Image (cartoon, rainbow, N blue to C red):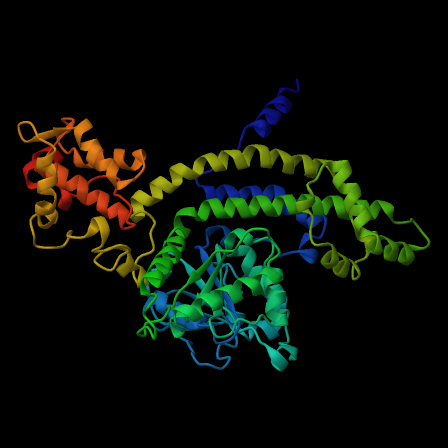
Length: 540
């Protein structure tokens, strides 16, 4: 008689089907996380609700730093071109937040128009008011780099007397909003200005909880010589140690990110290696975008759950009729007690709680009697989502990354500065180490070193022009390299896989050993230009 009821229950138990990770994240947010946020006024305490555009947005790179640290010049360096609205100078030239995005034609979209565009992820910024929106704009430019990422330029953070001037909007709040949605946060420091102002300190403190996204860049490092650079680096680490309270040492990328000649080129190789590492990190953003969004949404869900427990506990403690204001003041003062109760009763990790002092400040303006009591069904639904839907979405990511990489060319950022560092003689290690000779006209680069090793080869008494592995080992171990390294050298040099080395293969083995002794990493497989001409039939 009531079979339709059981059929409906079965449909509810069936797992939802998602066509993509971004669609799945959007659905679980709107159906599970957002109702919990709305029930307990999450957006009043933390960040505004997500829009659909947040889940489809390109990876975002956020640049933060004091004025004249080279933030805008860094963007120009990445794009290898100027963009609308660019202003560069030693004074605080960038006086606004600027989203640098891809467009078929160059142009500028003002902030008020930008936040009403449903296709862009900035609609929630409307909450910061006209004072902010007048200082926010989108710069559109036709750069291939921006087809894969969006770059956010920020106003130079002030120091000295300037930092006491009110900007007219919640600068820290805006920065937190962008930081939560950014895939990478780059903190830039000038080699000549390492002092961290009070405003910059507050900005760095506002980025806590986003530690995995932060990369630190010591810019304009070519303006100091080698000895001064060591002192500058030490001073920067000392300054950061007072602000970033973590036991781990922060990774700092050292370089000069502009297109001018180096003032001191003593550290050129260091700058090139550091730039390559930073660009490789930025290039990974499109590949890892889905994983980052999933990770951030899980963090948001856990925070929303803890927030619900805190708010419902405060509501439960409020009296029905008299003494509400006194009780509210008492609860705020003893908020740490509420945190302890929630942690103990609901088995919440201390790291999941929002900052205590900030929570106290926001609670002062709230009406506790309007808070909702705990709704177990919303919590159960959230727990089910975290343990089931999120797991299935996590399993979809590798296949989606593979499909997108195959369609979009490995999901790498194209154009701009990335064009020169990915391929050609100026890529990392280009024309050096194992890559030396790859673009030369000579037939075999090892040939010029062959005479040096001929006498050693002949002293090993080769039989029919070859020496055995045991005999070659006696000579190879003189390099004092570990057996694991020499084993790799042997596998690379024994091209025909006969367990012996002829004169060409022995010369190749000695060449590879010397590369390793010079500090160069051995290739995973033997490059074509290092294969002896007599063995090229085996390498095809």
